[in-house]
Image (cartoon, rainbow over the protein chains, first blue to last red):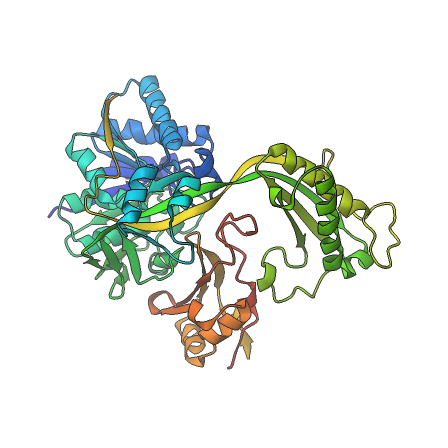
Length: 454
Length: 103
């Protein structure tokens, strides 16, 4: 078969890429361009709120160059996990940006929008059939957890992308998708070796992360041949090294040898990595082991409450020497004062972290007894009612500032408070409630495709 | 004796999903990688002790092609939970730094 060429423009839509690398890649003649648009790394908040963790302006810039070149070249453009989490509002935002760019540049094309939010009813039915299991140390999914969840997305594989392309879409905007599916959909459709397709996709979905020097995000080119693939940077001044390409399957995966996708596992045990020129790495020997069941990962979040945050420093050595007991005393005092406001212990959560002691690693910190000359306190409250969150935080601030401790000499105040106002309400926060895997028969069914003429 | 912080050129931690934390120790030279692997020091019992977890929660995978050793453990809390303090899991590697490898 003729080699197939693809370009990943950026590891995350909105993280950017250089125009130089992009133009150079486009000039080489590509079969498609694509970018991953999402990640759960920044935590549950963005899926919960349905907002991106990059700016609208940055996403629009990344879309703009890609869209214009794709339409000009007559090649497909694919974006997966739109807006960060692939939820309806995040997908709608990316669609809006694409439509804005199209209108500004007078571009016309057929576009597919692939939805990935899952209804509670469908999930309950599948759960009742025993088709949902947890993906690691998290509670089993129950109907109560599904009901308590604010938003749940399913992670699509290649099939919805392929269906959208078969239906004539040139631009595909997908909700939550596995990072590698975005890049594997087209080469798999055209019959390339699945081991090579998935492995190349796994390597280039993070784009600029596999190039040297790592000066920000940038385009990466992948070429699939019958029995190997090549990876090279888009930018002429950057290189790909054998070690970095080989090391990439370590990144954010529990195993570098086995990488799971909806319909099987990429096995890199026998992969060979060769530096064939200063800039280009050749990979062969990757295998894909299909499984007999098709599974879709589910990600969901529930609300944890309105958070209010307060920070302060402690420099008094006497207080630092009794800091744990002092904090315990403050918790007790706050509970009493909250009760006097009619706020019950279950109405809020108060968390006081001691930076300089064990805030980063908590009970896993081996050096918690080695405290320096100052510590930082990060105090936060969570409550279903934003006013309760603020009220308890204010009580906690006062308690920390003025509660006595054994040997106290700094009787005018225990804290160095850097800001006025000191209390920062940050709004609703979320936590992951769903991190599971759902077995399905039809890979298209949970992911409705909407076709649009732009 | 040499400490891992002096032998490794990459020593990092990161989420592997919201529930797991994965620690990568990478070496520039094959000889150093082999020495660390062959020393037998990096075994589940030691990692379990350093992180206060049980042996069967620890996975250790040597990755010859990149001179790397991958260790995966459960996160203390799910990423972003009310008590979590490292959303990306990027600062959980420090207990590995002082592990001593015999010459």
